[in-house]
Length: 365
Image (cartoon, rainbow, N blue to C red; front, side, top):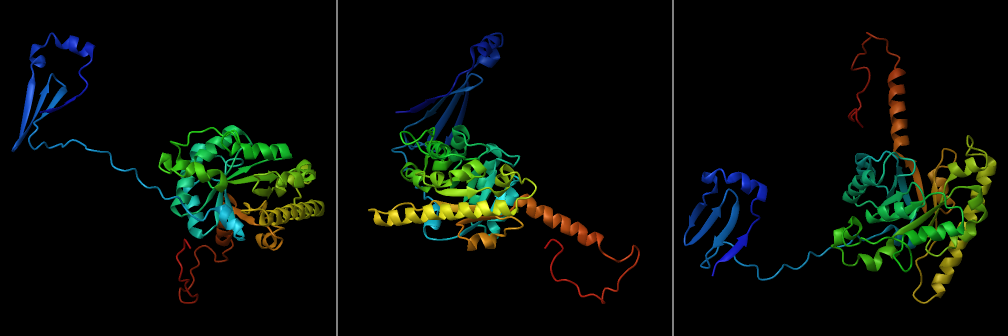
């Protein structure tokens, strides 16, 4: 018995045109000998039928579909490392450059924040950066342009380990941020988990069972109004990190050009103590509860010239962002130009190459 596969025939319009050309309508048969089997192709200008004899067919029938691929999820999430007591050191990626993202991962940063709030990139620009970071096994956090469900949904579908919501000024805004990261009925996140990158395009069968527990929900406190409600914001269930925003905070206090002002620093220290106090109380409560808890809220911060990352670590910060990629490149570029322009050798004057020892490193290092 022959197995027959039918392919699409020519369009009606095309067939009508060919009626005036009988030589094109003549059946054409191509026979391939591959003893003892024969494959015949019959066509009216397009292939319409393939016949394969039952004896020793070249294309045996498929008995069953192969088992689905087993997907192995990455281990060592940001949330699990924080729960283990680690202090994590990160970088803000403002440029949306996959190359710089890859370099940051290879350099050893614990996490990289792909910044869609102040950076020029959007969701489509963030995706190559996440892929570059994944190649170096570096967790990615996406900072949203605004605390909206639409932006959160698109960002979460890309599969970062954390989402950072800017300008969270009230406990209600914090609760909304958490809801954006939860599927109904616990939240308002839209569902396309069978086809998005976060679930390995549907290959990760365990995604739904753990995604809400693994995602790091980060709320930025960066206004004087938010400071007034800091303990209530930090206590919202599901808020994993309270991320301080010293630049916007200083601006809201009237010190845009002076983020290191004594009054700003005093407010920051007060907020730090309150967040760490909420964290300590929750840790005690989780220890007493059956099965424990997720821990947190953790304190996140951004280093400033007057407040270096080492100081933040000493004060109890759990996540410390030490720099911005654009800032690092700017500093290196300015120093490189200055070093060249400050050379005292006059034009045309040559130094004896033996008077000054050569450096062993390449110029690019």
